[in-house]
Each structure stands twice: as C-alpha cells, then as structure tokens.
Length: 236
Image 1 (cartoon, rainbow, N blue to C red):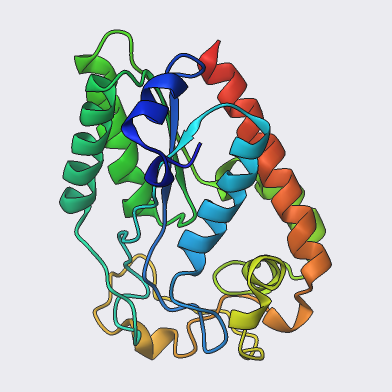
Image 2: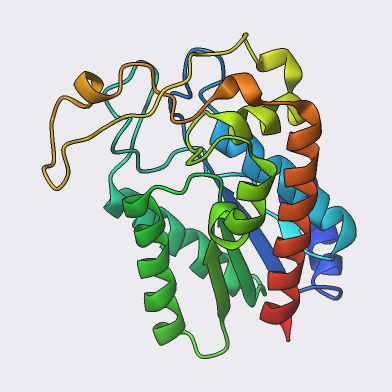
C-alpha cells in the first residue's frame, strides 16, 4: 500500500492486514554528469515498490534529503545535517507508531557513513523508548554487496559507477545522459579536507561505461529478495 495514495479509511483497513511500514531514504546529490540528482531516492523507492507488490506493508513517501559529505561541494548536492535527519526520522516513526504501526524498515538508497549512523542512532533511541516497536535500518549495499560485486565488472565500484548507472538504466533510462568518465577519487585519509572537489572532480567512483539495463534488473531482483527476507525476520 502506497501511504501517500490511500485515504484514512483505507489506512484503517490496511492496519488489519499489516502493522509494517517501510520508509525509503534518498538524497539530492550529484551522481556524475550522467545521472540525476535523485538517483539514491529513485533506487530506494522503486525497489521498495516492488517489495510491497509481493509483501503486505505500507510504503511511506520517501525522505528526499540526506547527509552528504564527500559530495557536498559538487553542483546540485543539497545536504542536511545529521541532527536534522535524526529529528525528522524520530518524529515520523513516533507519529506512525501512534497511528498503529509497530514494525519499521528504514531503507536508504544512500550509504554514506554519517547518514546511516544518524538513522541507526534514532533506531537505538526508539527501541529503548518503546517496548513493542521493532525497527531495522539498512542500505541495500549493506546486505547485498557481496552478490552485487559479482554482478559488477568494475572492481571497487561505488558512487555513480557501473551499478548505480545500471540501476537507473533499468528504472528510468530516459534520465541517463550518456556516460561520465571512469574515476576513482583519492582522499588524503585520515585527513578531513574542505575542498572535496580538488580530489574528486567528476563525482564518479567506478566505471559507468560498463553499465547495462540487464545488470540493473539483476541487482533490483536481488535487493527486493533480500529486503523481503529482512521484513520476514522483523515481523516474526
């Protein structure tokens, strides 16, 4: 059930069938010169639409903004602070709980460290506060990366590279504008640098040239299967 498209009566009837809500998280973030700024959001939302076609759950409208660090200086990236993401998530989950939801899956198409940590911190606080609340926090890259890495031809593929480009080719090919150049940034770790663009000009991590719609469909099927399995564990 798509939460944003049902009425309050349909919501009440839906609670008789499920107490589970899935919340997609994405970003407004550069993804090279060839992919849209909402790449992370599209991947999360579209994969989860396929999940709720198979499983009974409410699919909430996506949270379109996230915490972006390495890309924050690139054109088009609009980041928010971790505390903003924490507060927003806390309010959404608490209000949904008041309306009868008991199981929550927070699924992020963006796998940034500070972003995911913010979601996990909220989950820890919520399970301490509410006895009968169940919650899972994950990114598809967390639970599927070993299998996804076997689909990719590019070693160490990541942001806006072979896999993400393949996914958008499968989901919204009309939004793919050619291919950006292959690129692998080298940040001077452990230093935290202000000028991210100096070390990552193109905003790509991997080789978009090896992307294909067929690879994207394989990854989507894998992500849908794994998230469905997590949902089964959560509801038990």
